[in-house]
Amino acid sequence: MSATEDPNFDVLIVGAGLSGLCAAKRIQDKCCSQISFKLLEKSPTTVGGQLDGYQSRWITSNHFHAIQLCRELGCEMCELAQMTESSQGGAEGRALRDVDPWQGMIFGSLAKIETDRLMTEIDSLSSTRFIIDDPLNMDVFLERKLLLDESKDFFRFLIKISCGFHPNELSVTDWFKFCRSMSSVRNVYEILKVNRTHMVPLEGWASLVGKLVQVVGEENIVLGCKVTRLELSADEENSFVLVTDENGCIWKGRAVICAIPCDDLRRIDFAPSRPTFFRQPNSNANITHVSNFKVYYESSIWKDHGFSGSIFLPAYRILCFERRTGLLEGSFFHMENVTEHEARHAILHILSLTLKCHSLLNAVKFEAQRQALPFYFEVPPSFNRRVTFASSNASCWYRGFINGSVQGGVKAAVLALLEVRPQTINFKDVTDMQCIHFKYFQRSSGLERFWYSLNLSSVSRFVAVAATVAATFSMLIGFTKNVTGINEFETE
Image 1: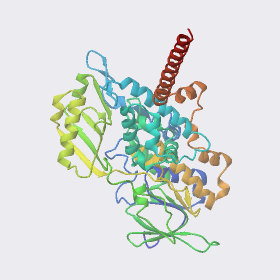
Image 2: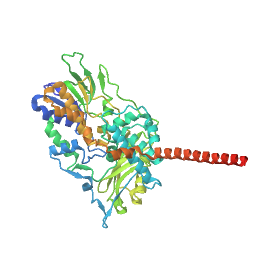
Image 3: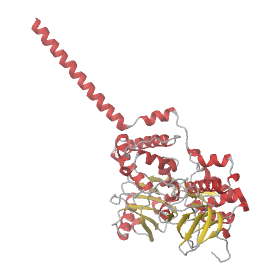
Image 4: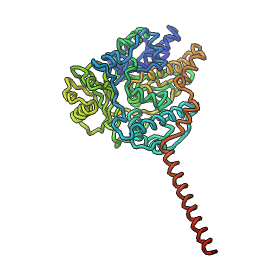
């Protein structure tokens, strides 16, 4: 901060990632020059968060808020398939296939059916107005709802990598809340399981960030400002928040938006008290770390074997897709004691095995970024009304769910403006904020409700009980006939 710069602002936004930029854009759209704001970004060189990092970034055609933002800024969208070669493989024009969780399983088809059924049930239960208060352990829930071990392993892997917790560490209500924040559990799976119809900006995410910066104004962004402390004033009549960065600079705002990930949020010191909003996952679990990797080849040789390059395999704890010609990108989940060399060896062998191409062992270049598996924790939408959380929602941080980041920024901006300039907020803004996830919910039909009410586990239990009753009944009939026959014989 320069010596001549006024440190007092109406709104301070901590973090200039996609959530922070979208919050600033909404404030700019609503108030123009009537309200002062500043974005404080810890990176000394760039904004936009980790959009160009190792992890995958895309949106789907039904992500309303992200599509609307791209249209407003004039960002042309294209499918992932257009970033690579044709979606048809080779000169023969063969359709390329993905490697899915059910590949090579004896009961793969049944596992896929009952997994799809449970997804439908969870989506229906998590899209109601009020989520049921069910303290039942999520692992017990899976045992009751699923028959096949393959289906249970699929859900345990999906839950662990998406929110950082094993099912036995969550209640049913915890998981339903997470699914609501991501719009649906099917949405979680479809985002992780890359499809070539998923969409990205034609000029890359950097172009979207650049246009957001133009709208917000570079002069409103401070780089190299890592916030370490937020202090709320005790004076209710003249309320403000003091924001201190690691350089000792102090900023004052009437409202503060924390548009930073969960891991960064819990490193900030809140005063006079900090909201208690997180718990640590079990460190003894079978997955504690993730290696996000990029593997370069001279060409997309897996297409010669009929594969698209998209992999989702809980058995090998790996996700992968083709970023562009000759480049496979994904995540490998493992324990903390796995070394970088061991992770590289495992990744290359899994790619070679699943894509049935021995040449994949000989990569031109291999890059990996290892980190502890991030975990999700729920935070309140605001703290003492003057501090609003934008990027701490699960839909923002994991694998760059673009739509969730946009939603988080819009919602935080509306909450902040309700505090500092309520006259600028209309009924449509409030409705959009409160129903932000419900735009994606679809009402379940009677057939769907009947479908998810039937599951192989309950059917198997019903068949077992029915068979026991039938066997008992037949034994009673046989016993009765025997007794009757003996009595008739004695009478004669």
